[in-house]
Amino acid sequence: MKKTVRKLKGRQRDATQCLNETRRERASLTQRVDSICKKYALVDHEIQIALEYAASQKASRESKCGDSSDQMLDWLRKREFLGTSVLQRRSMNWSRDGVVNFR
Image (tube, rainbow, N blue to C red):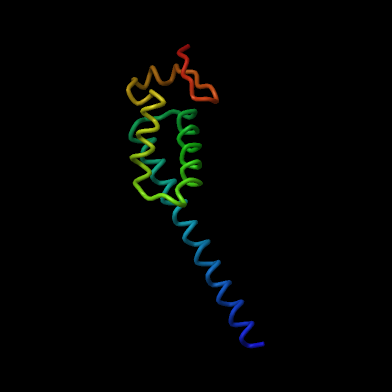
């Protein structure tokens, strides 16, 4: 009985550590997204796109290593709004598939 209790406590401890690590990673990723959004003066819909990207990277990052902020900047450049001015970005109309149409 004591052996079973010890095993369960060990599993609970492992699960708690895993949960805490996930929370720390999420907080770190959120801070990176916030800093990138502030750095490039992104507006609301652009922040939403950046957050969607971060969530997709979080899911695929389990097996990969690397600086996600660099990956995010590359991805944002592909979305073509880092090369535009803030006024141009505010007049962009984003579709769900990432196509940019200017109003």
